[in-house]
Picture 1 (cartoon, rainbow, N blue to C red):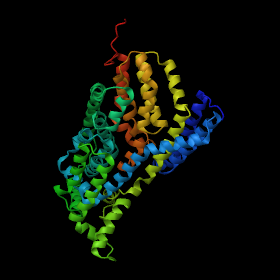
Picture 2: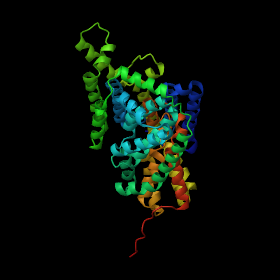
Picture 3: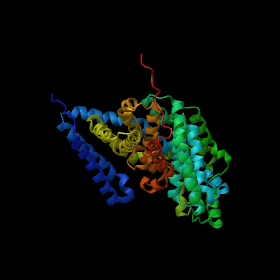
Length: 482
């Protein structure tokens, strides 16, 4: 068996250069459609390049193939959730749940503070249920609909949704990443959350202030006639009342009771389908082709909603786009993107190419400030290269853990830094699992909403400032020598 060699910095740079070049070319050639196939091909070619480097350094193809399969296996839980979220959006459109949220949102939310309210609402919901993904797929989708009705910018709204969802997710003890970071760093969960408050809350307050300012200066077309028109379309096509919010209430209760995401979202989708049959009979009747009996037609239409989503023709093109979508099929492109991204990340980790960067960083990270800044940069880089927030927490966490101990830094410093750099930057990268998910749900490219996801941008920067100023950097108490 050929002996495996340690990779060089040049070895590590080759796949990165290939990836960045191909992704840049995909965006240049295909624009917003780059995530519909071109990015996946770029990731595959970068994976093959990393595999060639691994083969040169003595790794067998079988070893590399097993690493890729393991990388894909890690993503299966997220893929299951992703597919079921597509089904949930479809049934909630048919059941009138999303239209009802849009309807009442138009009644109560003022355009002047809409962006800030969207951010705050998503933050509260995400903190309650511990899931940024579920928050974006439910409350976030509805808020984008409200923004359309109020004549506000959907891209800014998406930035507000992302900011709020990741703020709440980051501080929720129910969140997977909030539990993962202290587990990797060796810290206590609630001590970790308490320590995160120092960087997270100020960042969120600054983001809210910016959203308030943008709201008061927004060019909202608060056209009463247009809002009345949208309300009329909603009431003319759907049965709108508070009962339509029961599927949302069921999902939030299940999430709050710590039911795993996949069964909770599945139940939410099924409840939406049942509610559609019970309360949207006229809508379903209008969608039947009449070639089959009424009962068979009902079952067939609702069944199809799970896999191909819901589509409606109201006579208003913008409202048709707003009220149509969902289905598992709508998530297949995102699933493909996640699989190819994790294949690349798995090869990079298995062959030691990721570790090369960390070793190079530690050589120049002499101070505490530079160490924490380097950790955040590594988390962001891992999010870009490995394309998954879990890898962006676990890999840097394992690599920097001993260094933090050597320098007398408490483990909560590392766990907080992993979240400041890894968790909240993941939705800003289109080919990352989180970025791909948010695009599939909100239908807005992360490259577009990233500049408005103020919380996600401010938090890592504030963490670096704290590090260099020595603010809330906790140290291990010196032990008396015998």
